[in-house]
Length: 366
Image (cartoon, rainbow, N blue to C red; front, side, top):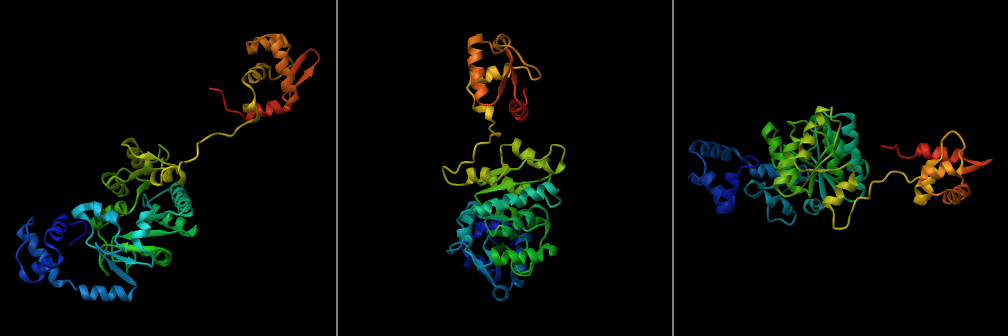
């Protein structure tokens, strides 16, 4: 059966694996829910299937088969219902189930920009440094950048392929996928030797969404396959996140639509972990730099703001500008003099160089 075949998944649930295999390979009686034409096609495929050979090829390639009920089976995949994989071929030594418990998927466009590559690699590296497993699809563009970022940080990453895990695709990522298999995991639904097709890429995305606690889309056009992953994550009750890009970039248009539809805007690993992590793992508040004048008493700040920038001024003029009395203005001016903000010029007061620099470094008035 093809990945995501809900009729086949229902048969396995209602009749059991042994009965489905018997009907397909021996009995020939059609199972409910499919046409005679489709049943004939499944029977023909079953006659050509060589599961023993597949298992032998897998063992020789260091690949194992994990199916529902095994200790290594990730429970999150069961949320797919009848569309869950009948099993996964796994290449790599870590436990897929344990890694899936603390994982986030990072996906996006194949034809990405330098901005997208940088954001994906940085985000994946930050997640890996904080102990999270980065899951992606092994494709060119954002997927490859996410895998490389996690690997560069010495972290954990999982590539979910739309083909047999013994034949890396795309070919240009053979070295990358081999390295992922050494340091992490390469998984897929299709048996050894099977090739990818457009529909298999789309169906692969539901596995990426179900394996992880949440999905981050870095760059995506309006018809990007990575949006399929995000929408699958949303249907499964996972967190859906997007990294904004320039409003002039068509490669960020899909992400912006995702954000308008209710996804959460994130800019770094701290934002992601605040959503998918444990209670209390909050992102730090975003603040601009604290300037020395920000620490002044409000009354002293008002007096400081009332001083002209280019000439000395008398206490009366300063008091009017600060909306206070001359006596209070003089008291504040001496405080400011002690802090190095003003200096006395005869009967007037003038801003020091320190005060002018502080004013230029401060926030621009609205």
